[in-house]
Image (cartoon, rainbow, N blue to C red; front, top):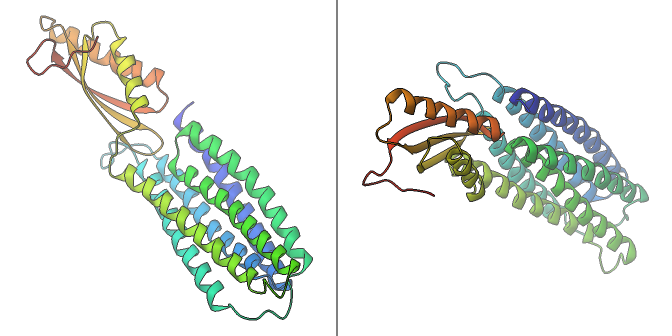
Length: 300
């Protein structure tokens, strides 16, 4: 699948995420206020932050699709990673704000949460479950960190809604014993959001720091390169993520008696094979070396 098609799929899901988050945010805040459910209001505020997060993901995917230019020879893919990092920061800040609000409003409860609080939480869990499943699947297929971050955001919303749901039920079950359960539920929601934001920001930071892909992906690169006729060994391989895909730097060994023209052809064959067979490879830079040298690391 082409990069543009990948970005198109991610973009459509991001738009759907913005719309769903906006509708759910309004529903939770208005219902939470009307039914005196602090934890439901907290869910609504979290969802309002999701509108911003999903919007950032959408912008990141659009900008990442811009073609390479003189100042960005590797393309603009890292803007998608930056979008994922920003989502992580938004989650951490939003979660901290929810915890602070829940704790400052702690006190005796005179009105129990209304039935509408339970209904809106069930709707929120259902919608978020569908959105998270779709985003995780597409993010895995196209390799989008920002979309995966958004999917984790949706998954956290489910956990948050469960925490709020339990808190409301406890308040109903025994108002005397669990008078503050609704407020504690809101605080748990905020803590979950902070934890997820930290995880998302860490993943984005690793990609921005040019962290190598997992060993299985590097093994695929080696396997495809060694299958090209004329390649006797792979000495070194490096990879950096520049958005949805990786750029590969590869050192291959060939017959030292081979002409420059022949070795140049083999290098192009390696580039073509990797880009054609591995959908997550955006580009390959091949350095040719003579086989059997003192520093050669031969691979059977």
